[in-house]
Length: 133
Length: 68
Image 1: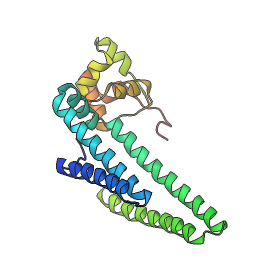
Image 2 (image 1 turned 30 degrees about the vertical axis):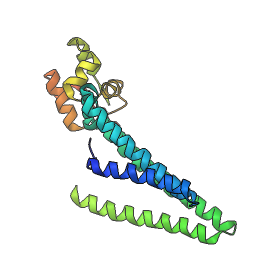
Image 3 (image 1 turned 180 degrees about the horizontal axis):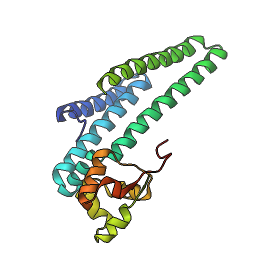
């Protein structure tokens, strides 16, 4: 699959995900640990199952290969990524202002700093890519 | 941008899936191309032209204001 990591990475993610969830049940850890574990497990297991299906089902493998090369799907993915970035910036900006105005200044500042960080990163990435094309 | 893909495909007795297989794209891409919702890259436009044995201008009809 395009943009894939080697299989051991997904095995490691799945195992780490399960370990984090078990650890969270065994000890009273913050909920974020369980959430991170669930996320890792879901992503890793999904990729492993996908790879297994590609190996076992040639029809599905062919379908996936075509989907991986399809330019319209790549275009949609690019569009979705750029829309997600714009929505993230807008939401963080509004959230930052709301948090600042209700007296949660540190959290508001974090949101606004992240917004600035994303904007700076966008500028850098734009400059790098514009030199390539 | 308008195009003649449906007409050319039907003339050759191809289904959307046949054309998709020839071009190495999904059937959904052919549907989007035919309805004019998606404009192909220059590479795909050339592949389409070669599949139909025509020039790109014979398939795609460019009008002022397209793409603006």
